[in-house]
Structures are given as C-alpha cells and as structure tokens.
Length: 179
Image (cartoon, rainbow, N blue to C red; front, side, top):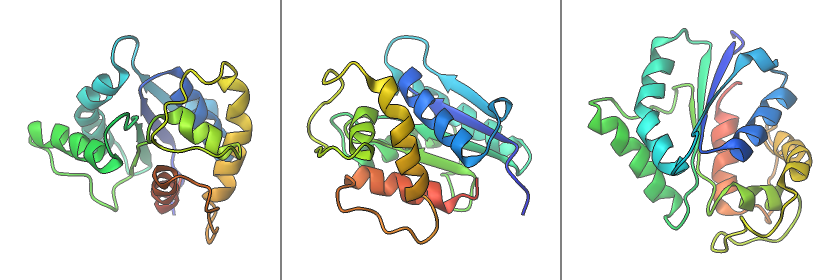
C-alpha cells in the first residue's frame, strides 16, 4: 500500500491544528507533509463549513496518496447535526457525499476540542459543558493527549469507557484510514 505523502488539515483554529499536527508527527509524518488550512479570524466553524467543499474537491483531484482531515467543533449541535452540515456544504456545490473509502476524515469534537484534550489527559468530562475557558495551559496538554490518541488509534485497541462519544467516533474515523 502506498504511504500518504500529504495530509491537508482543515480546522477552525490554532489549537485544533497543533493537536492534529503533533498527532500526525507521532504517526511518522514529516512537517512538510502536513498542510494547515485554518481560519484566520471570525467564526472558525463557519469558515470550515465554507471551505469543506473546496478542500474535498482538491483532495479528490490530487493523487490517491493525499488525505484530508476536517475538524470542526459540534458546539451546541450534535455530532450528527454538524456532520449533516458538512454534507450539505458538499451538496450545495453539486458534489457527491464523502464515501467511506475516501481519504477524508471528519472529526467533530462535542462540545469543542478542549473537551477532547481534557478527556485524552484522563480528566472526567461531559460533552455538554464548555471547557474553553477552564484552562490556560492547553498547549501543555497537547503532547500527552496526542500520545493517548496515538495508542487509542492502534489496531484492536479497546477504548476506555471514559472516552466521550464524539472522541470514540473520531478515533474510529482515524482508524479507518491508513495514514
């Protein structure tokens, strides 16, 4: 099987990108193989939805060894509602939905990426509470979270019951790709 040579990472902001960037480095990618696509200002969620069709089209047009990871917070919506919004953005552009075998991963942390960082660092969290303002040391939490995510995405790993449902779904989506 051919090794992925480029991973495009479509995210709302810096914290999301740093988390996924360090995860990809842990998987063995080099910095030049990771292309950041992140919102510069304003509503990051809205920007990601506006970019998803453009980036899926770009991924589809590139060689098979290119992957796209889309991460957008569920916020107050359910993960399924946010996924439907991403699919609707494709439909509005006349594009086919993302097929299971496509090299596109959609990660939707509920409520936001901070929930995942805390959960991956072993803290008890719910998906209803907003943890964005709970800490100031998010960057220090990335590396331990990445290590936990790395081991969680290994084949045949049994996920801890403490993983919130959106993280369990994200792990499954990451596992289905041979990054």
